[in-house]
Amino acid sequence: MHDDILLRNAVANKSSLFDDPLKEIQELTALISNDIASLNIAVSDLQTLQNMMVADGNYSEDRVVHSTAVFDDLKNKLMGATKKFHDVLTTRTKNIKARESRKQIFSTNVARENPLRQQPNAIAGPSPWASSDSSGSSQPSEYGFIF
Image 1 (tube, rainbow, N blue to C red):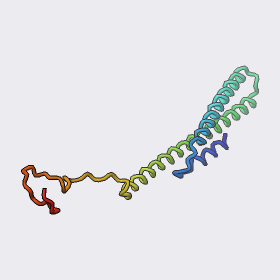
Image 2 (image 1 turned 45 degrees about the vertical axis):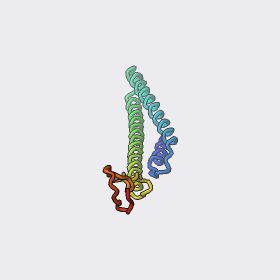
Image 3 (image 1 turned 90 degrees about the vertical axis):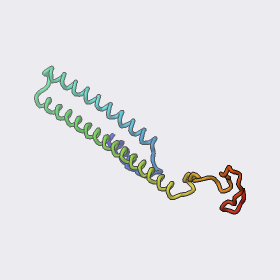
Image 4 (image 1 turned 45 degrees about the horizontal axis):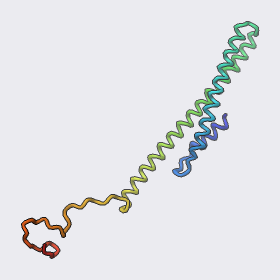
């Protein structure tokens, strides 16, 4: 499981706009989540078994101390792996947000810099050949045409 987390960490730290192995990340995330859940169940079962054996009184004090130390060590390692996994997921989320922010900035800058991608401005007034004079008088327009 530790190797899976390291691999997931390496994949999560990729920050390229074009290199996002989403499917691989989702598969690794599901695999690690399942492993952590299974290990949590196993540790819980181990604790239950340990408590039952201690309650029976069949173990010496040294054996109880040893089994408690082993159990605590396993529990701490599992908590550490779970925290690392959580940190990797947090890093991945931050990288996705940063990438989306860069995309937004890039898209906004491209639209501002590329006049072909911008929407045409609305025409301010009527076209020069349109006659707005309804009185029927024939006056030359600013272009010299008589309407």
